[in-house]
Image (cartoon, rainbow, N blue to C red; front, side, top):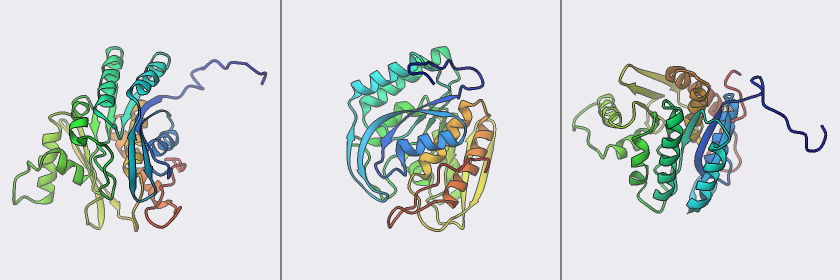
Length: 281
């Protein structure tokens, strides 16, 4: 190819793009790298905007620094002014100022594409409970919950987000259903993940106004770094390509389970999902 030659996109070359807001994990297992790899494996293309710089390994978070909101704003403008955004995935937000920018971005894009899908992974802390923001994580994401198409908390996050408002003396299933009802006051779709439970199988439960469905997956040995990022991003990739919510949830979970089954070690502690496996493998 001659230097300076420009390729013009054709329909056969173009990929659906997912705008991603997430933190940078230097261990490479979670955050923006997991998001980008999962989205690529599912057939879409990630447009990654880093919201937070972290100091962490595959187990613990030791430091966090939100990115300057002015830089985030400039990155958003550069991307949405040229590239068609087919879906948005939100992970660690970093600060209330960045959350406001994301809300503004979504509102701008939805003036052109009212049904633009937004997947919110409400990461409130690391798997070990380490803080991922210097502010109140629940308050930061509150405005994002109201404009998300799908929110994907695990059972611990769902409990925190609903402020423990479930009734006493209920079964686990009833408690999750109550939490889902509360979460759906903001978002039309909720996927409550069962990875933090102690059951033999991992049960992921999808709730919407129209239907409900659950999936059961074999609980694998060990702990995994970035499994939530992987699943949420894979779902966003499906929605970006025009798949239905149910199809996106189904295929994303198949891909994520395969990534966890093929996970590898980089050191003692949590394993790294094998993101480069195709969902169709």
